[in-house]
Length: 117
Length: 141
Image (cartoon, rainbow over all chains, first blue to last red):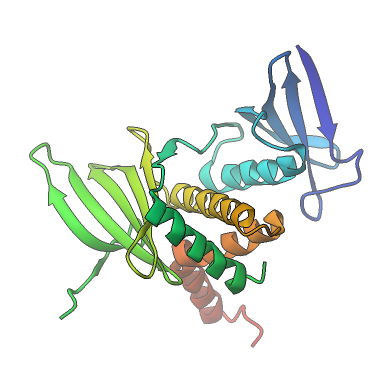
């Protein structure tokens, strides 16, 4: 397995004023997995958030968003220095009927208008 | 006449229905409003434990538009419900954008929906902290 580190300091990006993060991604033949997110300040690791999230369903452009969610979740849910975050989708959605599909389309239209999307 | 809704302090939702099982667990259906949408959360409460069982979202015509079932023993947090609803609403926007042959900025949608949902789920906490800050003269105006 290769281990890649996307270091946001190197990319000149940061999370907030003085906090940076880096994603530790393991690549195998079949899939890439986000195995940890390191939160850094002044080049030192403040905390390591261990994860086990398959990246196959995430586009790389959304990786930042996923990482920010993990860090927010860590901040709000944990009092420890290290935490294991699992993917939050521990649910399944029932397939909508045709009537429900139509209603969903209308609601989506409302949301597009409401949020100026 | 509308029934009086009781607010559940722990979850922040209004209690719509309660069922007390013989095992001692309470099965609760709570609701909250997100604009025209109604979010119904199914929760099982025991001693010092709450589990999320389902989340259903209805439109203004009371049509079920999201029906989510959670794995057994999923601990209840408002954040978990918020994330699930946010994820599914964005998925719904994706589907609609394909049907309507339009594009939208998914990151912008994420941020805007997240902000509104945060107010729905955590609005009382925000108000409480603002009230506290006001009492201590920490607010400028």
